[in-house]
Length: 132
Image (cartoon, rainbow, N blue to C red; front, side, top):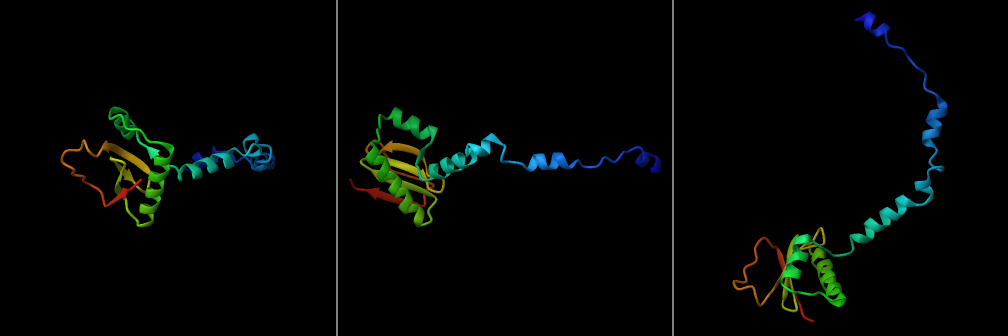
């Protein structure tokens, strides 16, 4: 065992390499505020409502459109529901029903309220009706 330990060589740490790694002022990503820009975009995207691929497909299949005013009203509704601590919500607006994951601010699916024959919604903990 001692013979094996004697085979290893100890190399001193070079101070230039340590200081070179710590010098972030020369990093062009830092100079261009890339981190700041990415962080800002991630934080602002959390304020925006996201539509899942499934929800986008359902909106397209069912020929349902959402105007910018409707999207703002839906986003405001999600913010109000979030204040109550809800997780999954049914939001009904202009004869369209949206199932929304509140913590992720993601619309999971959408359907025409008039076309939904049995009017049964499961796995929700809240509902909101928006009158426009």
